[in-house]
Structures are given as C-alpha cells and as structure tokens.
Image 1: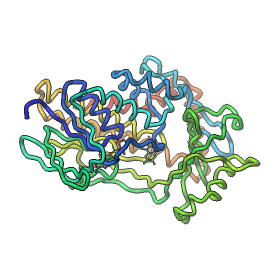
Image 2: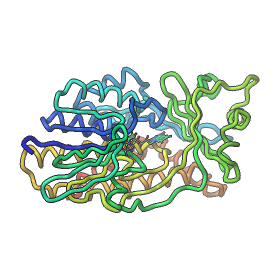
Image 3: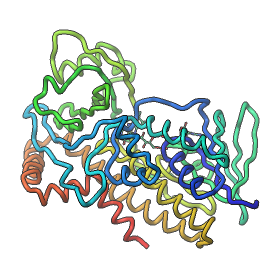
Image 4: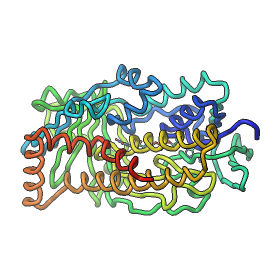
Length: 398
Ligand SMILES: Cc1cc2nc3c(=O)[nH]c(=O)nc-3n(C[C@H](O)[C@H](O)[C@H](O)COP(=O)(O)OP(=O)(O)OC[C@H]3O[C@@H](n4cnc5c(N)ncnc54)[C@H](O)[C@@H]3O)c2cc1C
C-alpha cells in the first residue's frame, strides 16, 4: 500500500464524519453501506453544543442551523403539575461557540456529509455493500464484504467499525457488548399537531415525568416527536394500532379530533458498552461501541464525538507518523466517557422521569427547581447535560 487507506463499515453519521475528517487530511477512504440508498428515518433529533462546535470545522454547523430549530431553553415538566424547571442554555456562553441545542433530524447531517464526500476523489462510498468479516495481520486489515451476492475483499491500513448497534465488525471480532436491554420498548410518534398552542410556555425540548407514563416532547422543524414507554404486557402489534396510539396521545392532551400522525417507530432500548473499542487495526465507534436510551439525546452526539477523536488520531498516525498506541488512548478516553457519562446520565434520566415513589419524585423535582433558580448551579447542570463535562473528562485521560 502506498498512500494510506482507511476502510469504514457503515455510512451513518459516525462513519461519514470519520470519512470526511480523514479524507480532508488526504487519506483515501472506502465506506461500505449495506443499504442501497441513504436512509431518512427519524432517529436522533438533538445536536448538543460541543457536537456543533466540532462540525463547525467543516462549515457544517451553519448549514444544519439553517435546516433546524435553535432551542435556547430545555424544560423538565410533570404530566400533572406542568413546568417544573426551565434551563437557559445561553448560560453556556463562553463555554462553547454554540450555547443552544439544535433540533434537527439526524438524516440532514448525513445528507450534508454525503454531499461533501462526493466532491473528494479519494473517497469511495460503496452502497449495497454488507460487511461480513474482518481479518488482519501486522501490516494491514482486510474487510470481507458482500456486494450483489458476491464476496469481495478490500484491504486498508485501518478499519473503523461504525456499523451501528448490531455491528458486524464487532461481532466478527467476538467483542462482548456488555450491559442490558430494558424490558419495555420505546414508541416514537410524530405529529403535525402544534402542542405549543395548547401547553403554555412549552420549549422545543421537554422531558415530562410521570409515574404511570412519562414522555418526551421534542420539536423538529415541521413536527412534534413524542416518545412514550410501552407497558410490559402490551405486544408490539397492540402498541402500534391506531387506537392504541390515539389513546396515548389523547391521554397526554385530550382533543376533539384524532391526532394526525406522520411517523411511528417502536424500538428496543439498551445500555451497552463494548468490552474493547480497539483490536489491532480495527476500531469501533458510535453505536457499534456503545448504545444507550435516548433520554438526554446522547447517542448520536457521543458517536460523532467518538468519530472526531478517532479520526484525528488516525490522521496523526497515518500522516504525521505518530505511534499506533494513540488508538489505545482513544479507547481509554471514549470508553470511559461512554460508561461514566453517556450511560450513567441516560440511565439516571430514565430513572428520574419514570420515578414512582412520590417522595423521591418530589425530592428530585425540588432539586431541579433549586438548580433552575441559581445561574451558577444551572450552568453546572447544563455543562453536564450538554456533554461539555464529558469532553473535558476525555481530554484529561492520557
Ligand atoms: C429508532 C431509533 C430512534 C433513535 N432516536 C434517538 C434519539 O431520539 N436521540 C438520540 O440521541 N439517539 C437516537 N437514536 C440513536 C442514534 O440514532 C444513534 O446513536 C446514531 O444513529 C449512531 O450513529 P452511528 O453512525 O453509530 O450508527 P447508525 O446511524 O446506526 O449507522 C450505522 C450504519 O451502518 C450500516 N450498517 C449496519 N450493518 C452494516 C454492515 N454489516 N455492513 C455495512 N453497513 C452496515 C447501517 O445501515 C447504517 O447506515 C435512535 C436510534 C434508533 C434506531
């Protein structure tokens, strides 16, 4: 191999951010994506400030802001009591170039990234290409990929496994995905109904606690997305009927006519972290390396932050001749953050929003009120919920 070449499994946000970072530094990149065309399903919809700071390196943040909604405030609510606490993200001024959350669909980032990558001659995006197995030796790594029913081998200096929660790369290496799956599933329904006209002072990001059925209300440019937990005794088919979805929406906010729903997705939710993020020339990032519940919006953000950390290190190794041991630092930094911050915070967010014990709920809500009443405490809280603390922690790990 003459010029450095990195293989990437998966054209989600993590694979594509990695591809753009590497290719911009002059490294040849081949991305394998099992789908035959880009997906536009509704998944993550929140960009946290540090992710926006990172994407600004490529001028992508302004383009995303133009297609999204700037959320200056986030709210903690209670289904019966209404607003509990509101947090003003402008308190993060000086900590970030983007002191707000951007509400914007994840697929819009993928589209922008694909447009940028299409301009670079040393980038190949191979669609309809399903990664099967990975082998490696001291000099190179080989991806065995199924394309049109035929196996083809591709060789590179390194391979990034960014192929999502069921990562074929992770499975091929036999790396354990430690953690657990929640017994309930999450239902995400989107509607063009304007909640803000009916729930006073609603912000674009609202976490609504309830001992029976909590929910999250998130605005994206044309829709409201409502996330509910399912009950253990309900089958998937029962959850997805029109009647059951209308009942959930009507219980949240009764109205005379049925809700018009635009999308509905039911999915399993996990808290898992891969036991290793690096094995030789193969490195895992994003959902392939860690998955978590979506309360707090840390999945895609954590993955994009992995992608920048990892690709910058690969550039140092392949262009500047740094030691490959740098990849062990990637594992130490990002695995620690996945365990200590992303999984810990999202698990705690779920516990708080669904808390059934009235005393514990009252105590948590009073704590939130006290934090919101103090600008200094609010700033600390926002540094944590916006993942600024997590990045500082990663930087401190050698
Ligand atoms: C239904 C749903 C809703 C979600 N909602 C939220 C949310 O509200 N907030 C939040 O923060 N996060 C949410 N997430 C999580 C968020 O979408 C992920 O954290 C994010 O997509 C991770 O990006 P990624 O690039 O690592 O993985 P993905 O986006 O999963 O991308 C992986 C890519 O790899 C491809 N691929 C998979 N296997 C192979 C293979 N063998 N060969 C080649 N290609 C392969 C896939 O087709 C895909 O394009 C949601 C996820 C789901 C599934």
